[in-house]
Length: 232
Ligand SMILES: [Fe+2]
Image (cartoon, rainbow, N blue to C red; front, side, top):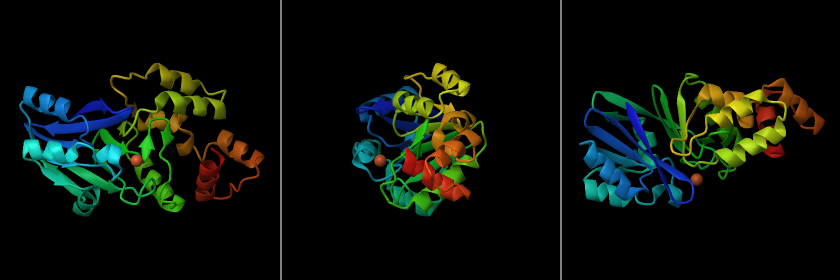
């Protein structure tokens, strides 16, 4: 499976995943550039879907589906389906509630399209209010292979890495991470995320110490996740 990233809006990132001559689009806001890409690469768009039902992610998707004669799948429909077949392959749909109740991620070996659930160097806001569900979603993503690239729904790298550096000023990994930032192709591996993204570092002694200094409950992993979400 291959993937192409499309920047649109202020900092949104949408995607086309493709194999052979078949493609699916996730968050199709860059309608014309996606159409151009499909034409240039002789790809047939089969499905247009979304990571969740926020307007900056669904914008353009209905138009893109209509123009390309592709089927339009809402995030809830995609979640029910559990996977989206594409050519000889299939893209797994992971239900990852937290940012919103309908948030989903798409996984195929080497590729995670993570919407507003997991960003490079941070996580999404918990608009659903269900911080426990968000924790389980993040744990699901963390269990994927470390060499999986995280393709997020926004490019928040610069501001997020600044916060990460504020939290862990001694970290050498943060400098290395930032050196790998390319606004033309925003992606980092899960291993890189685990090294810098504070919200994945709830078991790291440095972070635990920081939470303890603030008088937060660090007795269990989920308590530390709650503490992290509360503190930062
Ligand atoms: Fe969102």
